[in-house]
Length: 289
Image 1: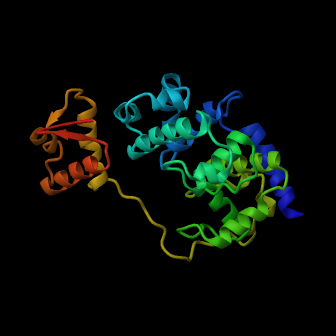
Image 2: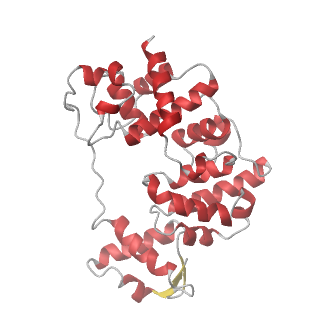
Image 3: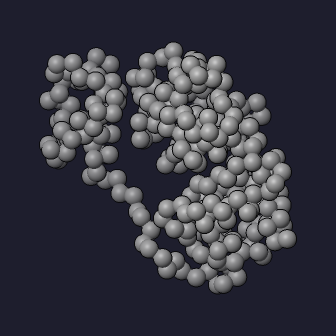
């Protein structure tokens, strides 16, 4: 069967070609997998490696993180971006301690109930930490399956029910093989079947790829969404948050807003957002983490 042949080839390729990421090392705990998945959301893996090492050294267990203040988690998050993830990871640690005896839960419903854990993250933790058979659909896996199976350059902008069904058909029945395929197909998308410059000549699935067989037709669906950062509210929030990280005693509101002089209204909006999200705290005219 074509799917079985592709899965076997990609899993074999992964065994020889996977990046030596620290959370893939033998002995990595389920908590280490949780931390890696939170950090890698919308962040390149290369930027996650050293922060992950530092985080796991400081907070090797959910209990260790739960015992620290949320502001410490935000401070340690550094320049990873989307700092609300730090608060959600802290909240997840608290729930794991209070409701699961300090152990990361194993089932998908329990994982989905954790703060900040969605469909993808729950499946990834179940698969990578516990070797479960779970449909792990990130951007890379979706692109690989769109090309191999559907013959399309890119998947839809949002995950569809048809995609989930297709991914489930590709998932081996054996949990161990399914877990390997989840990691291998993701790595294939990251290293070979990339968005901008796919390396079809070295792809272990090339002879079975519907998109390659069709001549690599260009995407003809809705325009792909491009993420803009420069000049956005997110950049303004990041600038203010960076100022707070370097000032343990806090920053006067006027001085803090001056960190984003280009648009005073946007600076106020950024500060309001930080306060509303619990990423910053105000006492009189002083703002702190």
